[in-house]
Length: 325
Image (tube, rainbow, N blue to C red; front, side, top):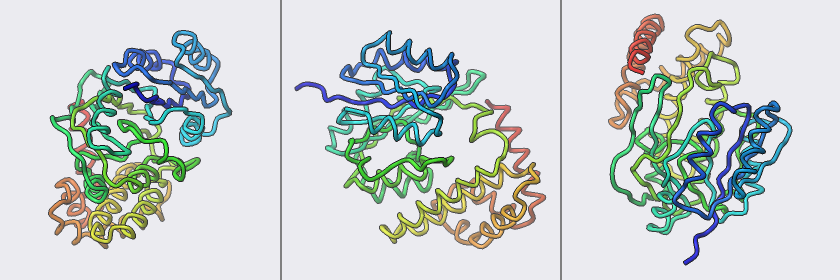
């Protein structure tokens, strides 16, 4: 049986330092019936020219140059022009194993699903690698998959490390102009599926950048995390009332994550106070939830004592964590 065409969507914006390694990992995929849709989202000339060079190097590459509109806009633009029966998204500053696409496709077909997931490694600048993979695969009901995602139990919200049937994007778009766009999208793609195929092997290599938009210093736009999370919470709890506890945990986590990025900023003091009040309002729920991660419980407990203690302990934790990278 002939291989079905799979479209790889790559939104590119001034990442010429990483694009060669990413594309090299794609050109040697064991699954061959591919098209690579590079969307140059208003990059400077050196990066735009490199995109064109990739098209000259491999006939499967199509390059689209457009005015800068952000990551969501670039992904949507590429998906709209994709010809494949299936779609996978890759961030072009990351790279993948040679059998990344074959693995996702085989596990999807094995369980006859419209969406499949694999695991990833986190690679740090000093060469350290955090391996998240294991062995085996299975099909999860949508409800179970969402529950595990809400608890950060292996399943995550990232747009990458997933294979989607193109029909899933007929009614779902990445939110224009928002950070954390995957949180506002991945759950909606899952909710269109009867079940989701999950492979536990790591096939995607995520490069951790300390100075990236999400990992860098606090900006007001990072409050998008709360908006995206609350939107997801409303839809998921409405469709699956049994997941209300998991949804609440995720909303508290989003506020802890945002608070951690606000520790050294004088911006958004009113929003910071609202975030702390929200976390403390649901303190007992988090502490009583046996599925809540231990780190969540410790963080909520420290914040309940006082914010100053929480701030000191989190900064110590960050120093220790950075020492391990």
